[in-house]
Length: 146
Image 1 (cartoon, rainbow, N blue to C red):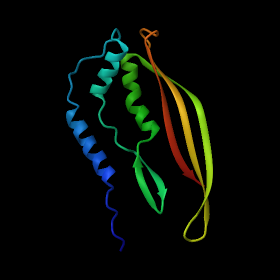
Image 2: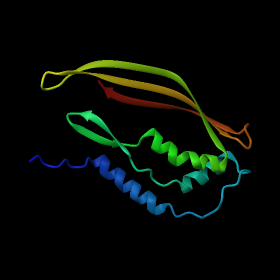
Image 3: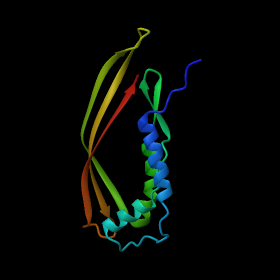
Image 4: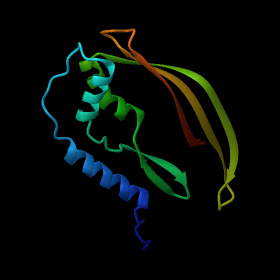
């Protein structure tokens, strides 16, 4: 019978950080005010946001899967808070690359591995004072097989 996979050190650290974050999430019941500045609104969200549990897995090859947080789960937790305080996050894709590699498995079968790289430009806008905004870039990578 195969031995159970040991958790990776990063998984243990992630669980520990999530546990600590949940315990620290005892904050005041102060209701957000739409008159707050952009930074006060962000601060309120940070105080209220609990750790978001990973809800999906990613096949990383060799029959191994790692837990990941899906975009949908993250948006489901954060969007209501943005709505409460009056923030909107706008995004534009500024660069995209895809690389395809043929991967040969031990049994001789081949698969195509798709490596995606994405760069987006984000603008966080205070809807109650649209001139107050924060802009930043974000990068992401993913891999899929067929």
